[in-house]
Image (tube, rainbow, N blue to C red; front, side, top):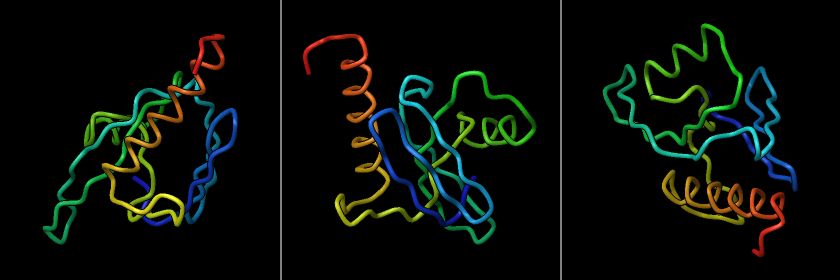
Length: 110
């Protein structure tokens, strides 16, 4: 799971920047965003926004699914200036953007 980082959205998807990697995902390839609570080494529960990406496989994906139920997570501690809030707020906003993009892609009214 990513610890610390930044994400940005664009019309077709979003980009997650963390310390060593940058991942670009299309809205059409990701599942619904949900929350997972993990108990890290220090004993304080952390809420993560988690999601799956179609076709992803590998040891890291498997391990994340084992811990959280999904293969990917947004970096912890995200509080964008445009959307102040916690993981619940971020999951709701990401799901709204995903739904809007999927509706626009299918030609449905938004």
